[in-house]
Image (cartoon, rainbow, N blue to C red; front, side, top):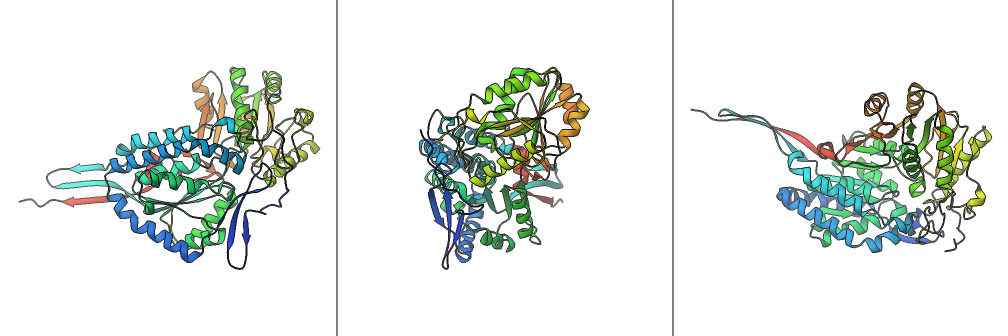
Length: 482
């Protein structure tokens, strides 16, 4: 399919359009620059009423048996899956992911199923004593109203990480989705309500940044989960200052891969390059920098280049497309700037632009591999969030560890070796939330999804996810004895 000319947008243009009477939130499609969807931002007074509805419904929802809440959440996810044929092209229009990849339902279902399975044990009281004289225990109590501010890059997967366990634990949920994926919150709430979740238990809201900050500053919510940029996380903290509202923040990454001399080379190339380029590189835990032992460096680079040259850049609605446009032109421009600066400082590009004539200088951005890079270059330090990766040669574990830790972020790392003990020992020295061996760019719902440094705070999924979405409440019951 031919790629339409893209109407260029200035940074931030098209997301919020303020008039004298209202603010319109617009989703600008990266396919052709057209307005795919728009909604009116809710005024503060109306937003306060909506949140009050969620608060009023929370006690009744929490009073329902846990098994009933689990069943309703699972039914909501099932209903969402039934909408997948509509969701997949909708995502392509909103954020550019090729339809060939089929959406996000598999992961949404996997995560909800796992959190449903562990709910009983995760939320069970911790009994300290149950004797003739005392009952002492710690129970988990839902926070109340949870605000989920979800990102556009994996709009269903990132949102469900909090929505499913929050509802199962007895919270009510208000979701505010990114303008780039404007319709996702609406669709999720519709699916859950159609499946039987009471309307005021799970609510979608359209807000501009100012109104969001005002609500947070008023203490309208009892827990806030935000996935986005470091600047966005700082804005959340400023808005919540003094309210003591707990925050869960996942703010970005510059995730490294390290290929050791005993690695399975073909597996490392296939996995790491997919982790770098899938979704046009727009993955929180995508691989953005790779360190390869000198003995494998040339072979790794040769295989990586061959793999990437096989990609097809194009319209995401075309089933043959393997790499679609970036979600917004300003994201693509940032990647182009990082590549241009790196080349000016001595880096070498390995992917020939002639192989990707569809790169239009707008949202359609060809993938790129860089060598002769170092950490003086922004492409090896700043989050790129696009289809570019720098590959460096290293001679030892110590050098690789130093370079992997030379980052303001700490989400995941990917270690490639046949020696689990070596991987675990290296992992213990890396400043990151998750250590993968012979895998990358995957979220295991049985493990805590968390980060350190400027990646944020808190943790989602696993038993720890339940603990973050509830608060401990102690019971010290002295029994009357004769």
